Image 1 (spheres, rainbow, N blue to C red):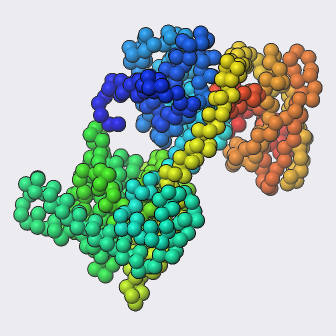
Image 2 (image 1 turned 120 degrees about the vertical axis):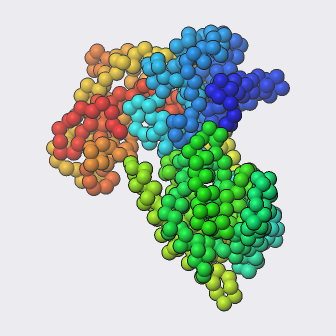
Image 3 (image 1 turned 90 degrees about the vertical axis):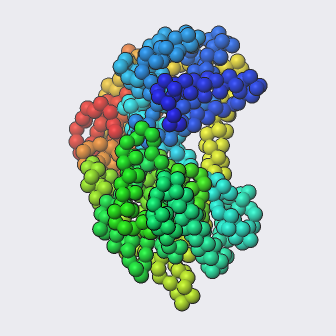
Length: 629
């Protein structure tokens, strides 16, 4: 993923997308659904279109809409900088002999990878190519789905963010790969082997409560001791290879305390993950770490991209902190982060720390792996944790606030983190009964495993993909290609007709009695005159889009309701009628819009094809708007 330059990357993605499709064909494998897991494989859509044109002698659009129903695209990247984009000259160099087979000119090829098809200076985006050639798309957590809809809204100009056709399937992890061997044996004894074969079954995990506190804590205690012993051996080996002094090597044998509350932080050192948030106030952190009655220690691991200078600087700062403040026994950085290191950490620490900048962690899976082992999460409400967090199974840093000033946000959230450690996390861990067991902590561990294990595993994830994407895509594809692709070709011709005549669609008049305030749920009749030109009422859907209004007068969380055609007027004009009502008190608004209306479409939202005209506010006259957002 991180090797080479842009030239290497485009070659890799040609091999993956085009070469991968040809490899399947050479093996006689004919999938009915193709899943592009991130944009890296998006060239497969072009290869499928090319072979379809070659086999059926059809236009690009006919081939595109025959193939799109069986393409599924999953985006994993919540920031534009993470998307693979290539300059025009590179696309020309690698595809000059390819795009003619698509029956496109070079500009037509480039338009498939542009957010704004009219911007000829825009780079060619692999994610945009995938979105424009797939009938289904999703993010990898509920929050990421929302972020992705906002991120790619420009592809559907004028469409409210919540209606952008990108859903979500939250990631999961493979339970048997990440639960420690000691905990596995405990689960086998009390949960039965079904937790291994049916980990998405909630009823299996309900039996967690039957595990005696003493046995669960003994297993967890043993995992922490194993982690401490392994860290000491690992540190000693690294120091020897670096030629460290004898005193420094001997000191590594005293790193960490197998009885202390242990916090784990391990991931890629990308700057948005804010590995230094915990170290922002060194004096306050030292007080937390150095408490002789309630000691705390931190194990950090991770790698930075070879070209990520800032990421490497974060690692340097953490290592420097450990040495400068004499807390080598309390703060340890483990080099060469890999799956083996991760397994020790997610099963051996007590708390899993995650501090990304909200909205930039698409999902995250390390916290899921920790939760499977009864490790409690302490995290920003981002990615998977935004939908997973509940009381009594972990902690949320903040309440999901987002600040324009990043430095201020870091200050607020670092203080919130220290507060949580001092007032909630550390006291809960060290609250012991006469038997020495942290009963309340153990209860949280059980709730964590019982609640999160069935929800955030790969069995549930694959089931979601199958039910929400694979099977619907398979069925839709079979319908579109039946009778020699009759419906696919019909859809292509319909969309072509829309493109030629859409500029003529206009909302000419809106009539609604808004002179007086409405009561809650009181219907308001709305009449609209729509000019369709060469199109017919069967070609479109005319809708009222209504909902509560924000302080700036914009409809938020709007709801679209179809209007019905009641009268054919002259010169391509038609009268439509509908109703709106307010479900709660407050300021409500509505707009009238026109969108495509063919049931063959995967969604009614075609890029560039939505017409809005007037927004009406209760008690006010009509106001022209360009788009409701």
